[in-house]
Image 1 (cartoon, helix red, strand yellow):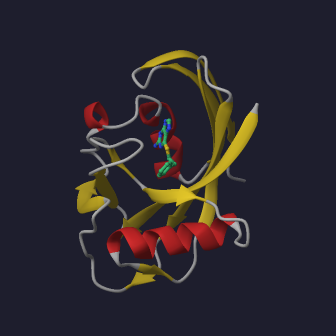
Image 2 (image 1 turned 30 degrees about the vertical axis):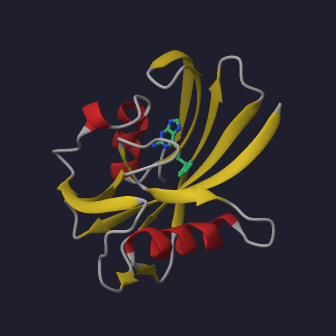
Length: 156
Ligand SMILES: Nc1nc(SCCc2ccccc2)c2[nH]cnc2n1
C-alpha cells in the first residue's frame, strides 16, 4: 500500500462563512471541496496547503492550523490518500477563479453536502466546531463508503 500525502484547506470568514471551491477538472471534479493537492517532496504539508490555496483561488493564508487527519482507501487500489486538513481565518489577496476551482462563500448552515465527497458530512461538524478529528474511509468507487471510523480529540 503506497501512501500519497495531500493537503486540504478550508478558509473561514467571521464565524458563519466557509470558502469552498467547485472542482472543474481532475480528481474529485464536479464536487465542492476545500483547496488542496499533493504534497511535493521539498515542502511541508502546511506549505503545500498555503501554496495550493494561492494557486487555486488567489488567497494568501498568513497561517494555517491543522484541524484533522483523514485517510482514504479505494477498494482494489494500492494507493491510499493521507489528507491533512487545515483551516485559516487569516488571509489576504483577491478571490480568483482558477482553471481548477470556482470559489464561493457558503454559510456554514448551507453546506452543499450532496455535491461533495460523501465522507465530508461525517467530519464537517467537528471541523466547524474546532475539534481535532481523525478518520479513515474505505470507498467502493467514489460514491459508496464501505467502512469508516472517526475519532475526535475534544478541545480542552
Ligand atoms: N473532502 C474530501 N477530499 C478528498 S480529496 C482531498 C485532497 C485532494 C486530493 C487531490 C486533489 C486535491 C485535493 C476526498 N477523497 C475522498 N473523500 C474526500 N473528501
